[in-house]
Length: 282
Image (cartoon, rainbow, N blue to C red; front, top):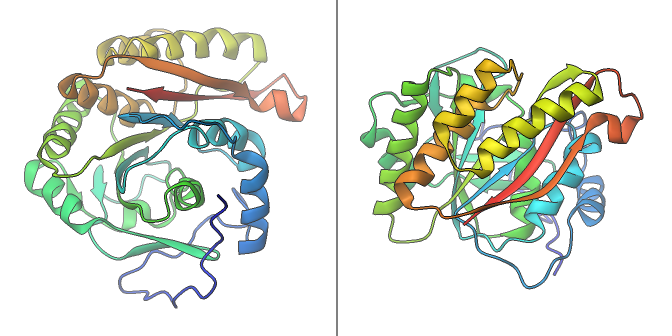
């Protein structure tokens, strides 16, 4: 079933709502264009599967949208989710949560799950309510139209991480797991990451395989160690490591690679590629 963008989106309240930062660059800039792109990118897989967690990319849709669409097109999402992403801009708090309002994109919006956000902030002293870290960050914004299309009633909590030490990731993951266990309703966890950056295709394929195998093993320490030892420029190492720590506490059993691509598979330029993977975890 196709869910159109909101026909009459409410006027954003700049004091409460996050305006789109990368519409028209990382993804289309109008509601009509977004709907047309989603029609092409989302795979129509039935029956839908439930998942504890997803790993999805966040590059421009032209490059990574097919990977994201392959994941989102095959899952049945609950009405609550926590989005974990990296902080590319360096702005704001190192572990930033938005706890109220809405995030807007052309033709649509997603409300913040205030109850879930407050529970996270009360669970961990590392986390802070901070809007600046999110204001210009693209990694979570590009997920919104996908989420709205496949789960129209979904509410979410955005969590942006700006540090990568293992203990930091563990603390975040354990806090997330505690909140998910305490929720009366199911919560899906989604980590947003791209893989190796700007090396030739053959090198990136090798490095990406190492990172993907670590993700599929559901071993947080293995992923963190692999990225550091093999110098894999995986921008979402912090959110994905935190995700794996959370999933360990939640009893995740298996992970499945849905799709892997690089930017070179789209552009034809194999000299400096970025890798993308889509993973479902149950």
